[in-house]
Image (tube, rainbow, N blue to C red):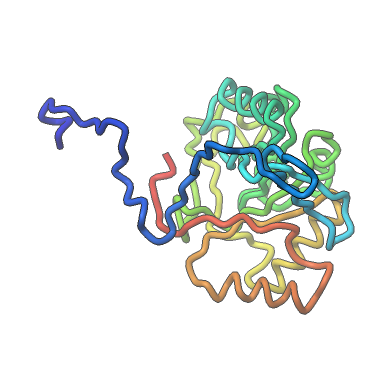
Length: 256
């Protein structure tokens, strides 16, 4: 409203976010980073997480806890993804290519990638939208693709699918996503291969047996019992289930 009246809308050295609200995340700078230990001074703290140990695939070790979130090519330009991948390489973090398939820009900088499998199976699909195992194996053969992520839903459109209008589909997008020119590309709200936790685990096993790399899932947390049921099944059946779980909020949004 201040902007519409031509008034100043900036707050100097401040924020409009309520930082004391439960659930707020704050990154705090530290003045004195050298920690005195029994063996002398230690600079900083190290972070190590190994993904893929419990399922027997080639594990991936990460030493950062902040990575590039998924955004498909088409929603972001070639230059944007190329810059993200180059930055991921320089920072030693992972770049999630999003559900739009693997494009040349994703491999531009040599950074490690997470290939996301959405409900439309873009990039690894047959004409009818089913998973094409041969195409999936081709993607897995790319050395920069170190992990896979099955996207169950997204916070921007909870409970809904997506539609890429035919007017927006270029020859390049059609080739990368494996869709037809002149036809709308519909991403269903859910994966057709499963409708419960048991089916999800079977699908994860199917994907992992093909790619031989860690396979995670991305969940939108609406009903807490859903993620609890995943955790319970992982406990009952060691060696099965997702290698990691990416959590998205169910608050909604525009996806723009």
